[in-house]
Length: 118
Image (cartoon, rainbow, N blue to C red; front, side):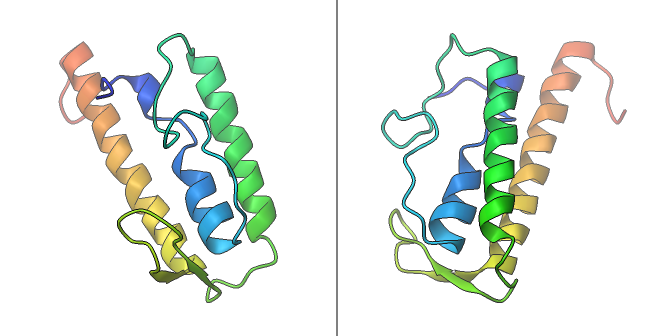
């Protein structure tokens, strides 16, 4: 299990899944290359995590630039294998995920500084 720290929040793991694999149909390896790509190396610093995140965002923008929001992609594996989703759905899903992770970051910040609702 991964510890909840700010380092676990900004990584680029889901970006290639939804935009490269599902929307564009490109078979890309997991971001971190271990198992399912969700294993975080404790030695990795914030600078590296942010660089990976920015790189994956840029690649996602590149592969989706010529797609319509209504274009359909298929989830190849995992619990939702075979499900077809639009690029619009993938964008909305990522917005939901970022909102959720921002909430997690806010909880961590509250634990650190004690300020609630700031």
